[in-house]
Image 1 (tube, rainbow, N blue to C red):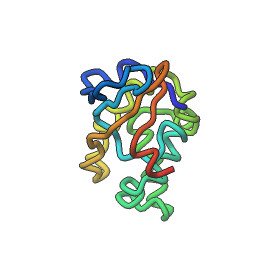
Image 2: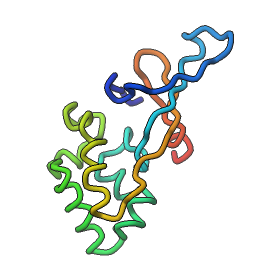
Image 3: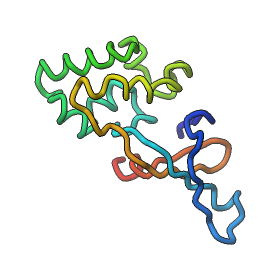
Length: 137
C-alpha cells in the first residue's frame, strides 16, 4: 500500500457513500492523476518507461527514445538515482514537486495530455488505491 501526503490531494472532491460509516466505506476522491503506469508501486523511471502514453510518445523501445526519457527526467531536475528508487522511498520533496516538474517539461517532449482526472479509494490511515492502478495491475 502506498502512503499519500496531504498535499497530493489538496482540493480533491470527495464522493459520498450513502449511509455507510466512514470507517467501513473509506472515501473515494476525484483528483488529477498522471498517465504513469503504477507510479505508487514502481519507480518514477519504471512508471514512465512502461506507461503506454509516455512510451508511445517518446518511443522508448528505441535507443533514442530511452535517451529522451532520461533527458526528460534530467530536464525535470530529478537525479536519475532518485528516479530509479521506488516512488514510496523517493524524498518527500521530490514527490510533492513531481506533478509541477512533469507538467513543466512534458510539452517539450510532445506529451501534451499528461494529466487526467482519476479516482482514488482512501481507507484506514492514509492508505490509497488508484482505480487506474487497480485496472492495470
